[in-house]
Image (cartoon, rainbow, N blue to C red):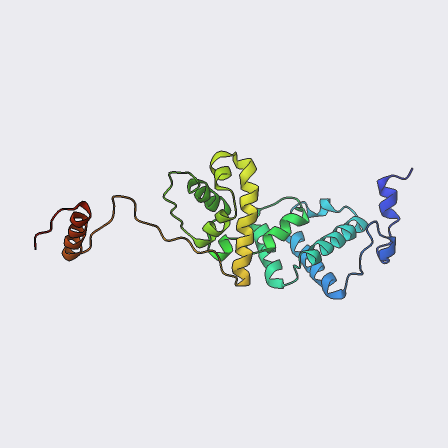
Length: 220
């Protein structure tokens, strides 16, 4: 039985039919982008050279990164530069999984000047409590919250509800980017016993109406 080194060594990267995961041929533009990405990574990932000890391994990694970027439609240099700059700021020592890099390439709530996912989640949980006054700091948080079960947010553990809220909140961000409208925050109703009388005449009219309802004769 061949070991993994023998299998990798037998792969002919110039022929997609010979690869472990047959895919379409990588075009020149995609190859140019992935080579640029890895040149940048080599500059700020200290252990980058240890992630790929030989050219064959490096080519396999590049190929899978290219497929992942194509699948996620990450092709604009603006998005790629965003991902590289965020990754550099993290100070990573080793090459991260391609999925992590893809997340960094995409616009985050903070990039859109929206509350962070954790801040939005905390607000959604607070507003899920039955006694909450439902004060929303941003329409995006309300939109994501409205797609969830408020009872679950106020009663279940974070490990159960946070992943779902994260999905809806990031989906809301995508809706904003696409220019789609969000759900409007309902206008707050005055609390019972807290109706404010704005003018003296309004107060007089309200008292007259109450007396009439109670059968009390109104003296003009």
